[in-house]
Length: 334
Ligand code: PEP
Ligand code: MN
Image 1 (spheres, rainbow, N blue to C red):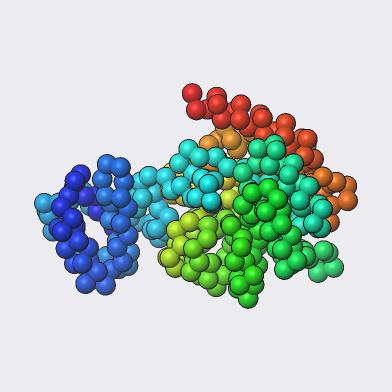
Image 2: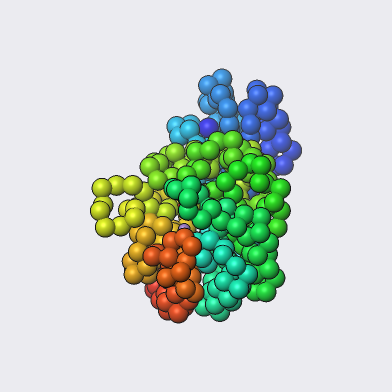
């Protein structure tokens, strides 16, 4: 249930109303907007007398929210959420590009790529240290050493880092990580979602290979219900019967998620297509569709990459793409 309060309500009366709902055993999520405050009730609201609430002097309107996702629901929080990572902002008109290799391979590799993507305009450095690989015989990432190398790249460039967490037991290692990525394969690892919900860091939540938007939002809800409201959603392609691409990029997810939720939505055209030459056109399309940012794999030697070389842009290609992204952004703003 959402309760829109009248503009400029008395703080004491607002608190009395919140206390009353809490006495009924309900959670109250308060969203203070530029024009008005919206209270979102979480829990069994069947006992709440809607007409009584509506009749109160400070209340403007009352609506039942049928969706099972509440905290990430735009009805609960009409204004866009802006997630801050240091000086970088994502959402609500702020656009951020996360770029870097699929996997951290060596200090030289990650520092070189970090410098190149920064010079081209990237706002965050990505790089996997813990890699979810289909085959147990493939490179599994440098793990703790990879995190240490990301930290060096951050010191060298000032770029905040985003990297994937696969297991609850590794959380203590992620203290210096700026954005924790929950990968597609772990989108419904509910224990992991609950634990990252207890952290303060922004969480980049990728859509699962075969998951619906509702399921993605319910996973965001797991994180938010545990106290962490800094969630960035990521469309990274889903499994369909398309035969020439790694996945199918569901671009309509961008405007639909924006309609359903106030959380920022970014797009990963690298994993969505699996083919480097398709990354730029899809990145531009995602920008035009209103994405709040992009996640792009960049490697300085794709032929020898230990993971996902085929979908990685070279730094020069990334720099060219970054310019074209800016051009699209200028057009859609007008
Ligand atoms: C990645 O970002 O390197 C990755 C493994 O992504 P996804 O979880 O979307 O497959
Ligand atoms: Mn990858």
